[in-house]
Image (cartoon, rainbow, N blue to C red; front, side, top):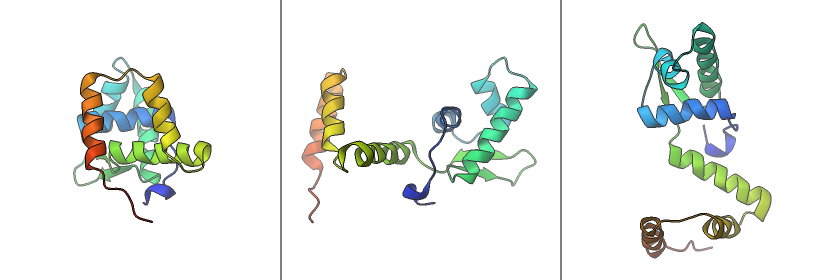
Length: 130
């Protein structure tokens, strides 16, 4: 599903996606154990429902090859974050990303390593031609 067509996700759905990004493909039981360490049957059902929603939204893919289905994120963290940042820029800044980046750089603490990485990135980016 194209990024611009992908519906937004809830905080609970995002928690499932983050677990899949961090741990890789997982079963419902594995995700439930990670997200709700002392959870029971109701938590298992919650994770199952969240995965169904994420699958419908095109954010998660299900492998049905085995008896126990395995779920994997079908969108990368980088693509997901990029979609959300672009949406914020569109909604709040007329499509310009500069005010969003400027705000983050001015208000957030940035380590020396992060500054070096940003400088390196800025030096390698080719400007887009209209």
